[in-house]
Structure formats: C-alpha cells, structure tokens
Image 1 (cartoon, rainbow, N blue to C red):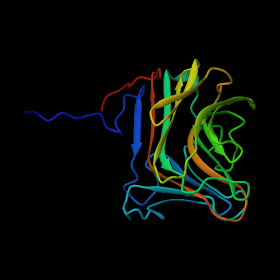
Image 2: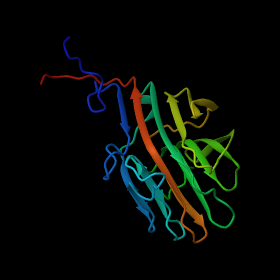
Image 3: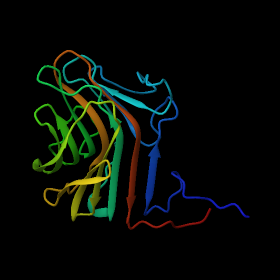
Image 4: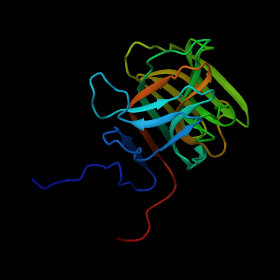
Length: 231
C-alpha cells in the first residue's frame, strides 16, 4: 500500500492553517512566543508534579504587582480576512483569584501580545478574574465592549478544561468551554489587527499564581491567498 501524507501542522495551502503545540519539548512554543512582565514567567516543563512529565507549559505571575506570563503571537490577524479563526487552550487553574491575591486570565485574541495588557481595546476571548464567579465572553472594538456571562464558573479542582474562541469572519464570535457553546457575541468585534494569546496577570497581592496548559491550538480558514509558483 503506498504511503500517503496526512495534513501536517507545518504544511498549509496559505488559505488554511492548523497549528497545534503539545509542549513536548522544553523550549519556546512552536508558533507562539513566551512573554513575561514584572518578573512573571512563561516556561515549559515547570512545576508539574502529577506525575512529573513532559507536555505542559506553566504561565506564572510571580509575586510582583502586575506580574504576568503569556503565550502569544505578535503578528496581527484581521477577522474580515478570514472565514474562520479559532484559538483554544487546555489548562488548569491551581488556585482561584480572590480579593487578596487577585489576577486575571484571558484566552483568545487581543490587540497586544503583552501579558499585562487588559483585553479592553480590541479583543475576542474568554476572561476570568475575582470580580466574577463565571467566565465572561469578551468582544471589544475601539475600547467599546460586549461582555456576556457564560454561566460557567471557574474551578480549581485539578481538572484541565478547554477554552475555545471561534471567530466567524465579521458575523459573530462563538465561545466554547469543554466543547459546549456557552456564548455568542455579534457586536463590537475587532475591526483591525489582533493576535492569539493566553495569559495570566496579577492585579493584587504578593503570592504568585499560575495556570498550567496541556496544549494550545490555532487554526484559520477561508483566506483569499493562493499558492503561486513551483518548488
């Protein structure tokens, strides 16, 4: 039987792509950059002891005020140029935010790759902080936002949960938690560049907090580019 080549993470026809990183190497993510601010950290194979193994990435605030860690892309994408863009991350939260040691988590698309930049300029993603029990679905454009409660509470029970933001061109943004549609926003979708990001950033307290990601995935389809030329 002849060998056939399945679709690869690194071979695309320009109009479509699908990148997955399972963090099996202790170095920078294959398609996103590690970003740290104010003594936060972003590193692989760190503080994962259940049991110790490869395949995880830790984002940590550190103890400093406004410390943060992120995985993010510093190349912008415009929703109108694609039929669909999706970004997801599977991670667990060891300790919830509270009024003493507070932080925020954002996973989706943001106007900046900076881990300490709040997603309130241009964004589309899922947001958590200690001011809300439930995850919030954010879409912001020109600092005007639509915020929808997902009805799903953040948990710190040791489980890994998947958070997916699916952008359907300029029509709407769908938000999924563990494969279940929890919100759909149709207003205030970003009209200019945003980048994929998952980040945690401290807002109060002196105790470090973190999230531990098992994998990330970024995919897109329906761009008008075509492959021209020959190898």
